[in-house]
Picture (spheres, protein in one colour):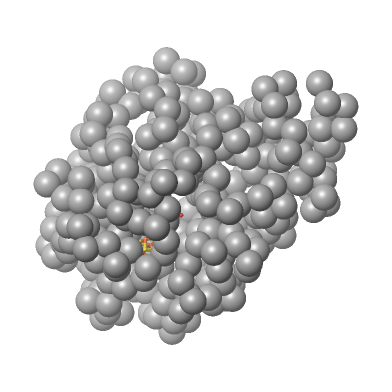
Length: 350
Ligand code: SAM
Ligand code: SF4
């Protein structure tokens, strides 16, 4: 095994921090032996905090309309072939009711940046959801908004916010987004969300076009410094109707190695095994858990719209990815040694 990489893994496991060039070295030396060592330490770091518990969140993808034009995403405004839909408040609440019956106690409301969901409308939905299910947490993932908007939504009852930083390097950000979108603004949004008292989720795609090991090292240093409560990472997967249609997908191996590193940076972080990971590998979820992940987000959206929320080609939305299959997901993860936890109750994840 590469001696320096092994030393860096030990150091990270002990100190939960590395210097930028050490992260870069580690990212460049994520061979099988190093990944195994990282995963072993990641599981050991997770064990005293979470045991073998895996938390589930019910994902409600409520609008496929988006005003932005991120080069990598199938929902981008310029994609004329994307089938657009928008759930009504009633439909969103019905999804949550169904999720509640199934045992979900955290709901993630996600969408493209859809201007029709004004503060007023979104706040009313959050309020109604919290009123119907006061024992549940509401996570929003609706992109960049003003600080005032985030404040109103927080006041309406939203507990957490997922906003991947996408990349911690402005130069890389500029290659993934059109000129009108700003890295500085995205980072400011994350700081605003933190200051407003949300539990905040950052994150990035693994293997996105033009990404270098130096970029990934910056992502890891950002996670180390910002200390988000959650971190969503998954492989980039191309979508046929985007400028990145012919770019290769991120790899399973690199994603798993990075999951372990993130677990070691912040042992109590909430770390999902994402849909994208399940899309590139059948047993992606289990492998994610073995690498240090501890969250899964099954899809609670109405069946007839699921295929329309197509961020990338072949995105899975059936089988154990579907919320109705919670029992089968539980059995599957139990076989891998994990216990699915649906109730909130635990202040560490509140
Ligand atoms: N619109 C909101 C936003 O951008 O924050 C929330 C929804 S957006 C679809 C959620 C995440 O999907 C993005 O942060 C991005 O990292 C991820 N995503 C988009 N296109 C992807 C692709 N082609 N492969 C993998 N992940 C992708
Ligand atoms: Fe819109 Fe989010 Fe997709 Fe960007 S990643 S195009 S903001 S849905």
